[in-house]
Amino acid sequence: CETASSSASRVGLGERPSNAADLMSSRVMIVDDEPINVKVARKFVGTLGYSNFVTLTDSRKVIEALHEEKPDVLLLDLMMPDISGLDILEVMHSDADLKRIPVIILTASSDRGTRLRALELGATDFLAKPLDPEELAPRIRNALLMRSYENHLRDHAQTLEETVRHRTNDLCASRLELLHCLARAAEHR
Image 1 (cartoon, one colour):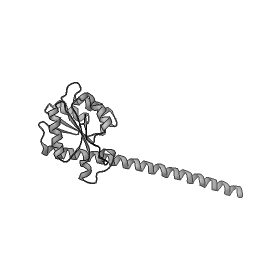
Image 2 (cartoon, rainbow, N blue to C red):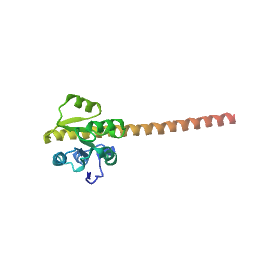
Image 3 (cartoon, rainbow, N blue to C red):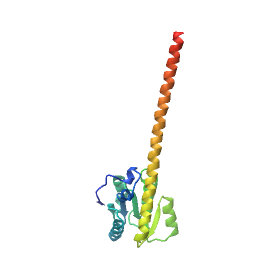
Image 4 (cartoon, rainbow, N blue to C red):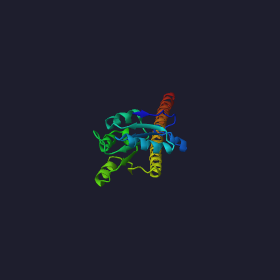
């Protein structure tokens, strides 16, 4: 497992990217059983300006690495020994934290059933091997923007919930204070 240094500003931490530099600091995980495919994908992604990588060639370590590294986007091969990309998608689909990670499938397979199954399990997009860097750039950007907006909406919903909770507590306190005032006024009569 190879990890680049972490950036202070990461889209996956719930921050809404304000510019392209924020997207470029996103953590990209590349998983393929063929080291040459990992190198090629990393080179293409690196030429797009991304520099924060996690790369794996052992599919048995992917789930643990996803929990530890918390990538912002996953580029995943489907056909791997031991644990296939579909198996990884299945685990991710059932894990609340992992299911929010956008997954771009990198595959040479054109099997319609496999593609449909991957989409049902939460795959965001597909790219055919050999990779086309011009196609890769907008797909990664779109996946990262989608994740960023989703995180922003989730954070905004939490902020609203907290505001409602505070206002509800304030209302309860003022209602209780009003009751005490009325009770004191009744005692004075």
